[in-house]
Image 1 (cartoon, rainbow, N blue to C red):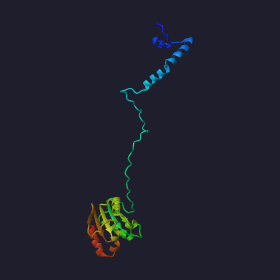
Image 2: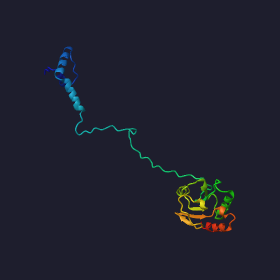
Image 3: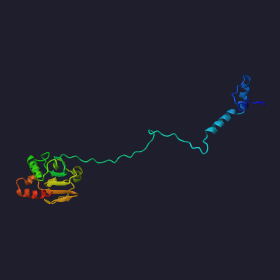
Image 4: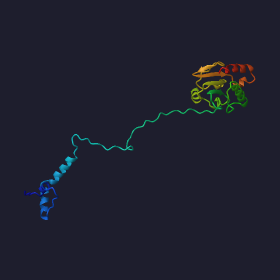
Amino acid sequence: MIAENPLALAYLLPADVYLLANEKQTLSEHVLSAGYLEQVSSAQAIVNEPQPGIETVEPAKSPAESTTAIAAPPIQTPVSAFNYAGGNAQKFLILVNYPEHDIMEPAHLNALESTIKRKELSLDDVAIMNIARHPDTELKAIGAFFKPRKMLLLGAATFPIGLTPPVLNQPTKLGKCDMLYSFSFGEMMGNKDNTKAFWEQMKTL
């Protein structure tokens, strides 16, 4: 078989085709005239064109490229801190009012310690808070901090904001908390009637 076109040799011979020097010019003319370069470009476009039924798979993104939105945690209002004496082991809160003292007048504190000892308690079991050191304090803030199961208010000046004034020397309930409002130690010192009235109700708390 005689092939006039040198390009045909590539299809007829399985091995590599080597052109002689005098054939190179002829090959160049045939490539240009036959639009060979255009054919190659068209063939390449066909190869690159997405084929029907074949899905293009996007490369997976690395974790660093992922932009997953994370919901911010809810903002919680911190519980107020209070200065107090005692360990509050039994959740027994005692509110006093002494503007000139950090906690209580020493003589009154000694009398209070004697009183709670008669109930078989100690300072480790109670929390004594001087409300004069925390003006404008709300009841709910005190409750959130101390979580009292029992509460003793010594004097009318110990009422926190939000507390409905209770009846004097009459045990009552404040939610699940047992509460007693009684005389202050300033009103009881040297007054046997007030002291007796206080103690009679304190024994039931």
